[in-house]
Amino acid sequence: MKRAARYIYEPTGLDLLPDKWDRYRPEPGAVVIKVQPFGCPKNGTMGHCYVIPADTPPAVNRAGRVIDPAQGGVLVSEASLRKVSR
Image 1 (cartoon, rainbow, N blue to C red):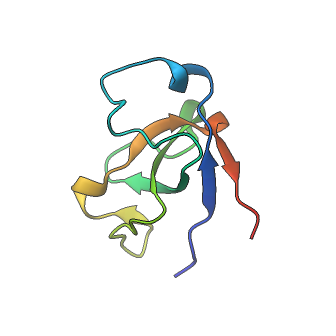
Image 2: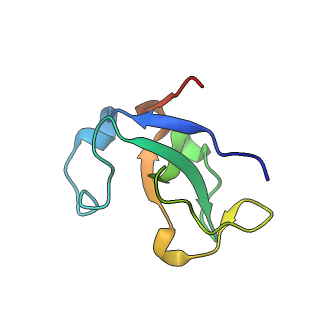
Image 3: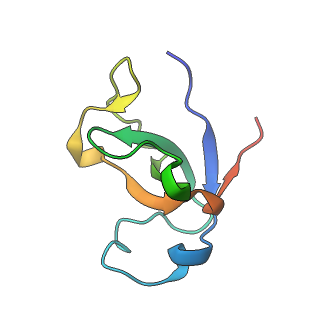
């Protein structure tokens, strides 16, 4: 399976506004990976995607979808992500 790309989370736009999901949102500067929870819109829809911390590898099936609902990810703006150079 292909290794997931890593991103640095730097909140911008709507990610800066407080909401009820703040406790799940990664800390600014955290390294995250994109995941695709089952039954959710594809990443990139309306400029948003689902992320989890990079140090907690998700349980993913062959299609790249998250199997474990507890690791469903947090919806953030794609503008808040900066790709980490290898």
